[in-house]
Image 1: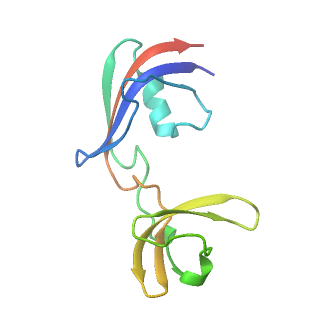
Image 2: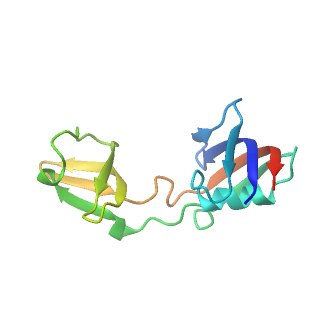
Length: 136
């Protein structure tokens, strides 16, 4: 798989900066799990040495918001060591050892609403990238 060195900036459609490499080049290999596949596909299309911007609808980017991925959980289902607060990201382990991260959206007494959708689900995004180096 191809290896890349690049500079990037990911922006929400509302203009908020989501993530960026800054002035320090980011290095990764296609398929290594560091970037979402939708961003990898933009990088594969990009021209080395040229700054390019990819505008993606939520369907092309991180997908829609799925109602079934929003769950109300009882406070007792959370480990005692976790501080329950709005917008906190919480990692949950399944009995098989898999991990899922959810964001706390609402707290009503002992009912805690956790959103397991990708944080950018339902959002159009702008991905600006400049490929500095590509190795096959």
